[in-house]
Image 1: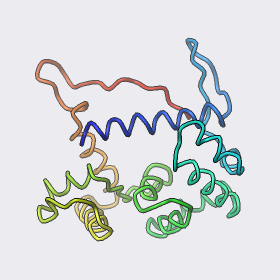
Image 2: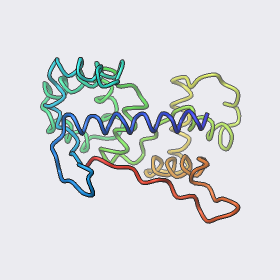
Image 3: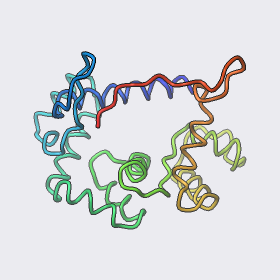
Length: 198
C-alpha cells in the first residue's frame, strides 16, 4: 500500500512538472535546470489542452483539468477562486465539487493546501488505514472508503484537532510513511529534494 502511495506521489509530481513546463512561464535557470511557474487558469482552459495533456500522459485527468479550468474561467477566473477563501470550509468544498471531475478528496486537498481552510481533511486509503488502526477500530477491514466513512473520519479528526485538523492529519500521514521514520542506524531519513514549480 505504501509503495503504491509513493508511486502515485511520483506520478503526480511528474504531471505537475509537465504542466509547468508546457503551460507556465519561465522563471529562471539555475545549474542547467530551468524552472517554470504554475500555469494560469486561462492557459489550461482552451479545448485543445485536453488533447495535448493526453499526449503528455495525463490520461483521464486531461479532460478534468481542461473542463475545470474552462468552468473557472466562466465563473470569474482567479477572482472566483480567491472568493472561496472567504467562504466557510464546507461552502467552499461544495463550490469546488461543482467543477468537472472534482470529488470530496480533491476538494478537501484544494481547501487545505490552496484556500487556507485548515480543517479540511482529505481522506484516501492511507488516511483511512491510520484512522481505522488508531482512532476508529470499528472501520477496520473495509474494502473501500464510502461517503459515510469519509465524513466520519473527517469529523472525528476535526473533533480531536479542531480548526487545524487538516494539518494534524498531514503530520500523522507523514509520520506513518517509512521515508520519514527514524532509522535504526542513522538519524531521521531525509527525503530527496525535488524540483518544484512555484
